[in-house]
Length: 377
Image (cartoon, rainbow, N blue to C red):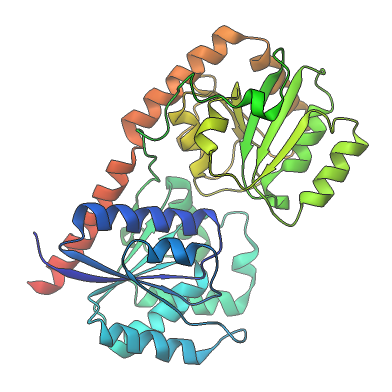
């Protein structure tokens, strides 16, 4: 081991999304710990966005090839030129469009190693019904050496829907920075949020998009008593609709829309439990962060969530769209402080045991080195 490996990290765009933020985190820690031998270049084949500057602060070359129409072949040639210029040994693609552009560009530039990082499940996705996407993905995977799935459920969905050989898929679970995310009674912003001292507070961190289930959660809160409050971190296209829904339900004073925040740790340390009622997921990093902060979890039984939330051990799983089940789970935990404490402690233990960021980074580095060794020998 110890070779110098030149890596291109190719992503759809620099918007603030879960996959993009995890890529930023991965690049940051690889640069910090292994930058002397793993040389990274960052490239977007979508629009630029707020994360571009954060990638640039890592001291890495960061390029954007703007997408001008549905499939822009000039991007392929641009990325291929970048690969040749930087003498890339390995390209890792994140998100579907980057998979396609990366496969074509790597083929043209002669890059020997390709990895696709799959961060979402496709079991409930319309992906497999779109012939163009199916054909594009089939082409991309033909030249991909390894697919990295974020959960076992994600791996199974790739095998089932995309008919990929299981031997070509590795599972590397998301990891969370256990030092940054931990339970700390000093990190409490209830006063700043003007929450009543008697309030029982649930927290949710997710983009405000229909698939995350905010609307279902609001319906459940409409059935809880007035002591129950909900803190929502994130923004998105559904915000105004959700605010209207909260008003119509008469719970607008108990639902706190905070938008995008940089103090997520403080917010998690200010709530009594974490909730995520998504209709589909890969492996949500927000749940791992909440677990690291020692919170009990109420979530839907979808995607990779059951791989980190164990029924009645560190949380309660409900069916997606089940308002009554969601209300019952929240009500139970709000009224059982001993159960919350036990589940919260179990959450932290589970995070420490199998979902540390250190473990995630190590597995990626070992994968890069193993694949590079395969072409160097």
